[in-house]
Image 1 (cartoon, helix red, strand yellow):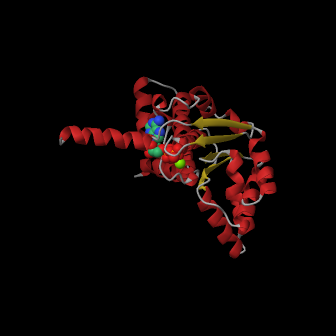
Image 2 (spheres, rainbow, N blue to C red):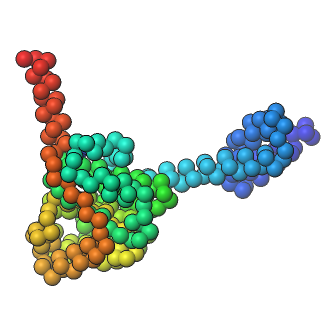
Image 3 (tube, protein in one colour):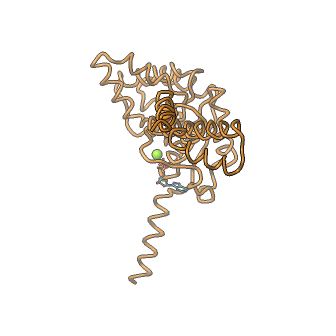
Length: 258
Ligand code: ADP
Ligand code: MG
């Protein structure tokens, strides 16, 4: 029984030190190192590497969860040939994440169904993998949350929480006009983010129509000024992918049951 003691202690220490991967894998790593004739330093190195890799992966998973993407979409499921108006090299460059370091923004503009939300989510996914904190919001959902927080006097807390993200994804600006208070709160988000956070925004609306959504021409000007100061614009003006997909299915169906 005495020989069991070091193992019990070791496991206790590894738990205390919060090294779950080492705790789980030390017997296998020790056995492999013994078999390969590796020294203690090599053993320790392998243990540390495994722990670090796992830790990074756990953190990336946590960041993905915290981002609250409605659906996970990635670049490798995006068919760039289906949407030739999109500037593919620019999207791929953005995926590397330098725009986040520079606190630059990205605007996806264009017709419905052209992959704007897909690409915005995919950029968010890349940012999570690069160690960045991301928050995805539908613009209307965000404004509703802000209005509710204001009612409950929790606005500052919400602003602070949102302010911690490196990247804010604001999806689908332009479908629903906001109340005066809603517009002001959205403006506040953009103002606070300016030069501190990156914003990726998707919209179906050309700039000249933004006043229709925000209601106030001066504020729209000020908001646009901040968002577009350092911005990459990606236009998607092809046919809707959903529509194309639906047409393709309809064609198949017709062929199956003529
Ligand atoms: P938008 O935000 O521009 O209205 P979405 O990004 O929501 O369009 O795209 C609609 C649907 O079509 C989504 O399920 C998306 O994943 C898919 N989709 C759009 N474009 C492409 C594409 N080029 N390749 C693969 N899937 C696409
Ligand atoms: Mg969309």
